[in-house]
Image (cartoon, rainbow, N blue to C red; front, side, top):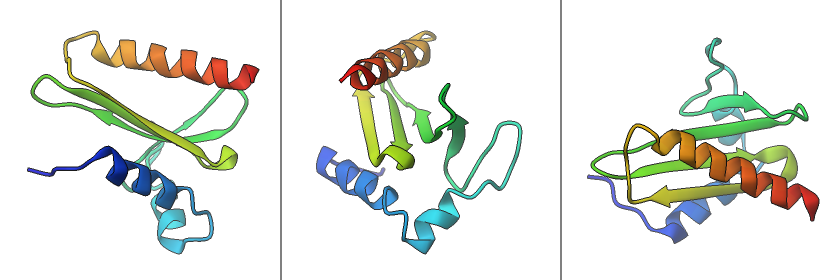
Length: 105
């Protein structure tokens, strides 16, 4: 079982934001289309045309989402101790609301 802390995840996000790191750049390269995928990452585009590197999932009553916005030098992770058929939709709603609030500031 893989165990991690929020500090570990913060370090990982900072690592993934390093646009000069060849390993990071390679992991962000599209290797599959429909949906766009990199190594590990689901590659998305927001309504402003910015690229988002995302990973989500869950297991045994948990759900999580991690998003990297390299053009904005920003990333976050949300961890939730609940999982049901609506958890993914709920997390995406939280993400969209958070991003809208950040854009207004």
